[in-house]
Length: 212
Image 1 (cartoon, one colour):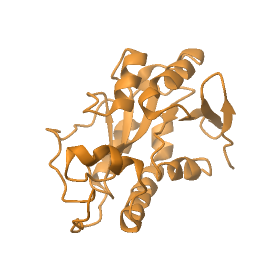
Image 2 (cartoon, rainbow, N blue to C red; image 1 turned 120 degrees about the vertical axis):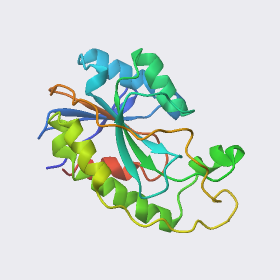
Image 3 (cartoon, one colour; image 1 turned 90 degrees about the vertical axis):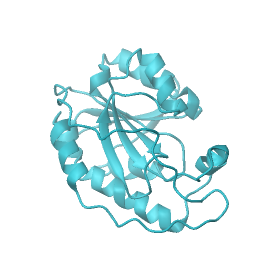
Image 4 (cartoon, rainbow, N blue to C red; image 1 turned 120 degrees about the horizontal axis):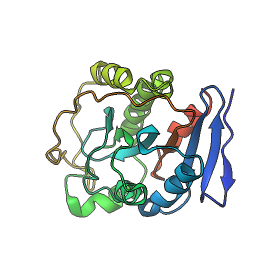
């Protein structure tokens, strides 16, 4: 069955209910830097705790093809996460971190994230999203620890050399990120929110999730 996402002016987002799990899906239509308001409003209206929220976002620190799951932590310069944390007054929500690579120059980041990924990168990003969606049943049942373990131990594509084109240069080392230990799974909840940025490519996560 498909989950229909409908524009809801009250939440400033496309919203739909995933019937199989009862999870709420949200795609904020606000500016990425203001993602926190739609997430906070939906969470407040349906009384969803931060620990029962999953935010899908692009991750500069990971190359295309890498996807990781974690709970809590800082925003690491990600303005969308920063706003969500401020609005929820908590860092305890879950994050699905979808690698998009780094342009190699911090001054090129804004332009990089606003443009479509290359065809090669897109193929790897789509494959990473596919691996994450295979674990959707575990996530929505509340077994986040089990989902994290499977996701982090699944084989990933071998790293490939990045072309030195402007804005698509060599990878920059992760910003002091330490390996994430599996965290206790949150209690199963009747609803869970997923919020994604508007970078081209992440929309396919929702397209495919709606078909689950």
